Length: 304
Image 1 (spheres, rainbow, N blue to C red):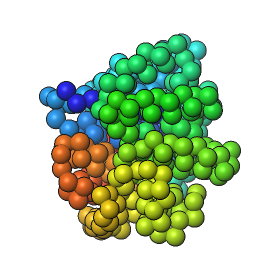
Image 2: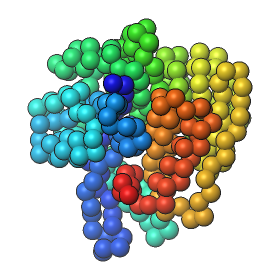
Image 3: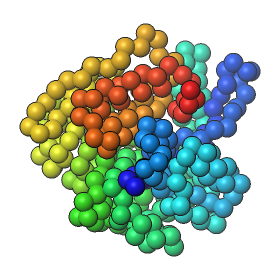
């Protein structure tokens, strides 16, 4: 059985329902969780295990999150449970023009303790046998520096045992003390990456890349062997095996909600590649899924 793990943070989400007198609705969200859910949907359940790796509390809200993930078919045996911590929380407010603003409460979130808790060694040992491990820059940003070093050591160990690492920088300035710190740590993790799915807008904001080719050049210099640079509705740039190619997206006349567009793209791309499809076919599948996601409300769309 092929084993895939997504490492990161999922938070409780409160959002303003403008269609029902601005009532606040409670769901959940997180970039790596979104990718895990869509990967589980893309891959055959009979021969693929998709695990979500994070830390939660022992409170009722954490229990609800676990139940929801399990209902999606995710394996949750690598979720640490910390009695003295809670999940993070964020609120989305939407203005009359549909623009979204996010407010976060996550400083004491359990996920920040993932690589510095009693369960850490058990989780690290289990991940040694995984075929593919995916994480994002948000995963890295919420950890303290010793935990980041421990995570980097883990990734190097997984790769030494023939496992592959997938990464999306998902640069969020508010999570880092300054751009220099973000560049320092993200460069370290890019050097432990096999399959990269960065968004050009993020890379340009942090590194000043002039175009997607500049992003690909920089990542290849760090040793990344397969790169797909996302550009929203524009063609994605594939760079591998000494070749580069643009892969056009699926046209969407009127997007409803672009939440998780990149997360779902990553899931479909990695899933297709792990299933033996070509990079071009994988990028086409990724565009198709992202197009479906942005035509519905919310990060996780209905299965049908």
